[in-house]
Structure formats: structure tokens, C-alpha cells
Length: 103
Image (cartoon, rainbow, N blue to C red):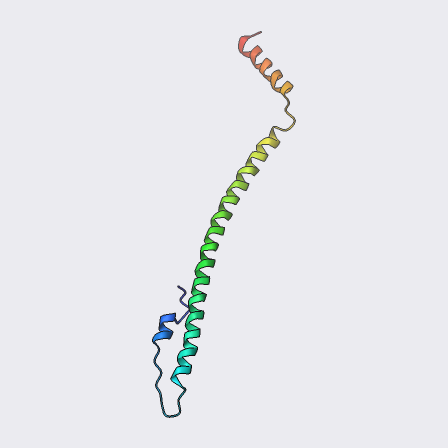
């Protein structure tokens, strides 16, 4: 879990208090500790869910960044070919054929 969290639900459950003549009622302490244990357990479950969701979002973020990078690359390629028409391509082919075939 996390090093900053000192107690687990089991630590709370297993805690024994010394009882003296003017101490608290053990039943009240036990009930309150039961509530704390439920909260701790729920907190741990919430943290695990968020951690799992965070990892999924992080993976999706990486995937989307890669997709964006690819799209930008494709856009750059498209922009370098901007203004080139089929007529321009046919002219270039014709010029290359003249050079190759010597016409």
C-alpha cells in the first residue's frame, strides 16, 4: 500500500487497550473501532479502484499521444504535397519519360 499509512484494518481490529478502573467501556470502543475498520477497508478499496483507473487512463493517454503524433506526421506530409495536382504529376512523369527514353 502506501508507506505513509500506518494502520491496516487488521491492526485496528487486533488492538488491545489496557483497562483501568476509570477506563472507557470496552463495548463502545469496540463499536467505534468497527466503524473505523469499515472506513479503512472502504478507503483501501477506493484507492485501489482509483489506482486502476489511473493506470488505464495513463495507458489511454500514451495511446492518444502516439495517435496524435502520427496524425501530425501525416498532416505534415500532406502539407508538403499541397498544391500538387494530377496534372503536375503527369507533367513530371512525361518529363521523366523523355529523359529515360530520350524522346
